[in-house]
Image (cartoon, rainbow over all chains, first blue to last red):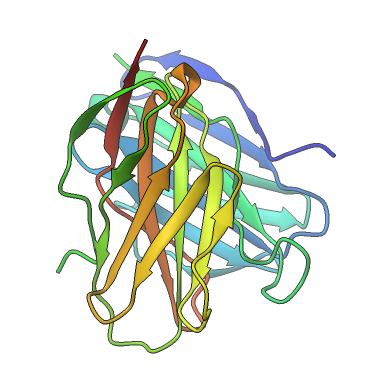
Length: 117
Length: 114
């Protein structure tokens, strides 16, 4: 089975440019998460969706960040305009309902490594 | 307040020996789940093991076992018979109540020596 698929794997962009990160969750999973990992702050949740609806976006740093999930098989995280402090690894993850097979696991993609110069 | 605390930033272990990674957590919700993930140098996050707060027995998955001490709010990961491929960062995480999101600790780096 295909896991969580993220693109791009690596991106280097200039400050001020728009960045769009993409995620395809595991088919049948009801929950989708966006996490960010930095040396300073570790792994932090940005936002998560249930059945394409945002449930908790309290971790989204500021208005420059936005996330959408137009359907069950696709989500985007957009940064506009990007800044050097946005440099991080961005993980997408998905999970089925608790009580279902694999319901006690959150499956992570391989991450998108973003560098803003 | 920190929900997950991992006090060991780095550890060295000899190949074939066991290693215990510490994790303490803080929650007032009686229903919660505890997770361990492995992050090798390649960067991916690999799920290792899960323990529910109502589970009567400690979770085990192959060479991984979770030493769950509820009264102490402790969920230590034990890796038995360490292998060179176990060298990685290990994260403890918690999910509380009906929420689905995970809160992560700062991680512990394990280096296995031949």
